[in-house]
Length: 416
Ligand SMILES: Cc1cc2nc3c(=O)[nH]c(=O)nc-3n(C[C@H](O)[C@H](O)[C@H](O)COP(=O)(O)OP(=O)(O)OC[C@H]3O[C@@H](n4cnc5c(N)ncnc54)[C@H](O)[C@@H]3O)c2cc1C
Image (cartoon, rainbow, N blue to C red; front, side):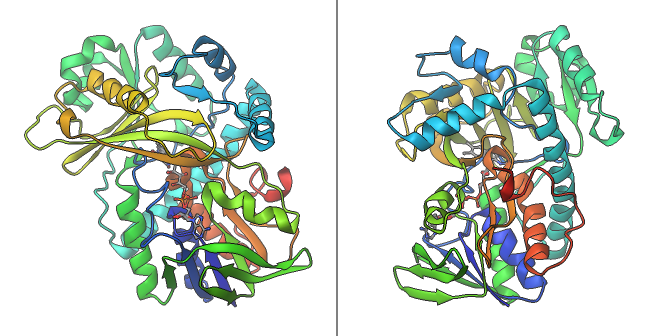
């Protein structure tokens, strides 16, 4: 089958790889000059096998009220005259109940563990160099009560694989000595030994190169303008360079996906949730962590990528406003330096923003749409690198008419 994948972020690239492996003739259209240059470029760097959690959490509404009007708020809703944004915000807030969060968490874990196996197999098969570290992720807690509560919550799950290790302060320091300077801020940590980290852009570029070697055609520097066909069936796509015919089209345009689907009557509530990262060179500094670290209080993640420290966080609902605001980028930088004061050269920090393609339930949309020939593999939100290998494999199975071998409840387009 001729399959057209729209978008070469980490999600579209993984889909293209597995579609090729399934024996299809695959073409990828990407407006950038290479793969992984938009949201997949400088993310937090975590591949979370067992600690992926939906962001629509019961605590979020309280946090929004607490931080209301503050520019350094970790979650900032800049409401604008945009019906899609308001509708998304209402749907997201409705998702913030304990029951809905826990249901979404089960789906997330189902996908992240499946994806983790696909990711590891892919990594081993292709030998991609992406500054990867399979050394686990530490989640820091400020006081014993919140550490105990988090541990009790995490170990409620029947499946022992999901249980983290509870580390008191000494054990935390033994696991990550770079926390020495600021250890007194923390009571301890939960340690998820299977979680990993690395550079998502390097991974995506490496995977695209591997896919190209295996026969996938990447049409870089080409912008999709519309899908061809109508509600009775999709026949390809039109781009600024002409029409491309295909038997199947996989939508992986991240946060830009909904605008192309609307004309064919397919509605999916994906909204851009802007996030910031800063990347600090570590050469000459001896205080950078080797393991990835999540500071839930400051709402940031920090990953060591070779001789760089990547720090990412914050969520801003402001459409596709790509402005890099100094105050918000600096809040992320300050938060990282408060944990690792000699972790790197803050004067040389590189600031970046990306648009997480977020659904209200914080789960991706994978599968067949109501339009024959049109498939979706998009909406991966805050966890796109984690889910990408699994969702790529799933969509390849679905396009090929095969059972993906994973329960798809909670992931398909028809849930909206
Ligand atoms: C600050 C931040 C931190 C994050 N941290 C993590 C993390 O630690 N772990 C994790 O798993 N996830 C993380 N994420 C989420 C993850 O980065 C995303 O979910 C993922 O990158 C989404 O990939 P994608 O391929 O769907 O989107 P994208 O990477 O945005 O890919 C979509 C592609 O479509 C292309 N495109 C768009 N429109 C057109 C058009 N008209 N024509 C042609 N091409 C087009 C774009 O150029 C782009 O390359 C983070 C995100 C952010 C913002």
